[in-house]
Image (tube, rainbow, N blue to C red; front, side):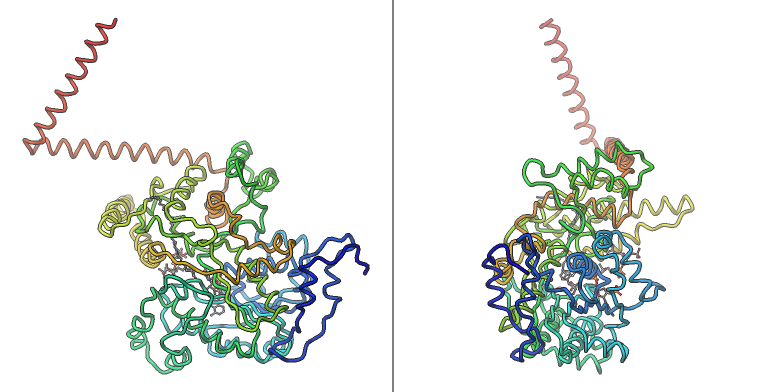
Length: 606
Ligand SMILES: CCCCCCCCCCCCCCCCCCCCCCCCCCCC(=O)SCCNC(=O)CCNC(=O)[C@H](O)C(C)(C)COP(=O)(O)OP(=O)(O)OC[C@H]1O[C@@H](n2cnc3c(N)ncnc32)[C@H](O)[C@@H]1OP(=O)(O)O
Ligand SMILES: NC(=O)C1=CN([C@@H]2O[C@H](COP(=O)(O)OP(=O)(O)OC[C@H]3O[C@@H](n4cnc5c(N)ncnc54)[C@H](OP(=O)(O)O)[C@@H]3O)[C@@H](O)[C@H]2O)C=CC1
């Protein structure tokens, strides 16, 4: 291949830095030579993404690929590196589906629509492998294990239990023991180039400022793993609060233990750890990018709604989006589960959630899932090619570079419901943050429980099944689990992430963008609310005008109900209290005098 332009400095520096791609630090290089980089050079002198090129012909093992982040990771890998050799997916059957059926369902989803264009044979690239990370040996068959050990080049370990109420034994098995087992496997893989472990920025949420280091745990993870073998459930439950200490749940505690386990194995392996904060809907990909920043920001949703209302209602949201609005550059936040803020946004949009105990000025450290995935792939490339001397930890957070607080986020969520109302709301969305525990309890009693009990009574009286008190119970549990994170702020240092950004070529910075400074929160939140409507609630955009009508109706009911309640209370008071009667007489006589004065002065003027 003939070069038509000189090599740019970042490519030259990559050549200078090129390192052997093999498992053990310090073992002899597997020469890949200049050809690898020369392949990146297109005849027209344009540079291809080095990260995308790195994954070419690679055998990649992903755990947790059926989860929220795993799906986006798999999608981006297939879309940007369609020439990769194979993706091994460690997964379990679920909901009566076999592994191939489950995988087929995932690959046929809207998320993978773009991949079909660049990688029509994507089904052949995916190799589902049965594994249960809940079992001590991961339950991988001998044959599969042989193949994994001999072929794997890269591991992305995303699987975890992310439940905050997980019993310690199970959380340890998934987040610590399974990680240890996987590292053991990794150490027997001769072709392994990098192991990327996904942790969480909250693994050390007991600290206020968190550096890119692994903090030691009071009890050695190996001791915890051992003790889970012989302690019975009652004792484990009893010691759980003592072990987790000032962390709020077993999730953050076991993720911290998982990191220590990774560190203990990092002498022999080429490892990197990524710590994302609260992972939210997609921002830029795989659906079209956001509109240009500036005065046009925010116009896209209006455009979507304008298009929507002019489209025949028989069009599905899909068709409508694909016909006009996607072309106009609308980006929808893709999300597929209720974790993090998503469940609460739905509850607020449906009018169930009215009060959250939160510190409005606390930083809402949300990070879009596509940003996390871009960083993950960049880290995989960098760690394999540059082979840093020590295990690098990358914080994937937004607070230090582009902070947004819960107050601003909450207001924007509520404003978005005006434009993008959800269907069949229980009540008109009207949520608020309270800082005081007592006020919060009051509003929960008045605005959550009282309407739910009343509505269930009504359902029972009309011969239907009550369901709102059950729903309120679930909401209360969710709130109690999540409130910790909206009442505290953290600072995460991001020097490794900043350093990595500078190491990327301009093309890689574009294709694998993880620069959170470019995010416009107001647009992002609006798209998030819209994405929830489309992908989670599966509501049709053509129903928006009707949903608006419904909101108007609920607002009128609200005013009518409040006025009626006021009049009845007042009437009862007047009947029973002389003081109330006096106040009432005073108000009536005042109004009468005012009206008389107004009439007299207008007669004089005439
Ligand atoms: C200046 C003043 C301004 C004022 C402005 C006012 C504006 C106010 C606006 C208010 C707007 C509201 C928006 C809220 C914003 C606040 C958001 C706060 C979010 C904080 C998130 C912090 C996350 C911390 C991140 C840590 C990061 C990580 O590393 S891990 C990933 C995150 N993990 C999770 O989120 C898991 C949490 N979930 C659980 O632990 C459990 O699911 C549970 C304990 C919550 C529930 O367990 P349970 O056994 O009861 O239920 P489960 O079996 O799981 O499910 C049963 C059914 O419930 C549904 N479900 C599950 N989760 C939720 C949920 N979060 N919300 C709603 N429903 C949920 C589930 O689907 C099941 O349904 P069925 O299948 O139908 O039975
Ligand atoms: N979401 C967030 O806000 C954040 C997430 N993280 C981290 O990111 C990673 C991915 O999280 P996310 O995608 O949101 O989580 P999800 O809950 O969506 O996905 C978890 C994945 O782990 C798999 N898994 C769980 N148990 C087992 C098991 N016994 N055997 C095999 N696989 C199992 C799940 O498989 P299955 O589909 O079969 O259940 C699923 O694929 C986790 O490590 C999490 O700690 C970090 C910070 C924030």
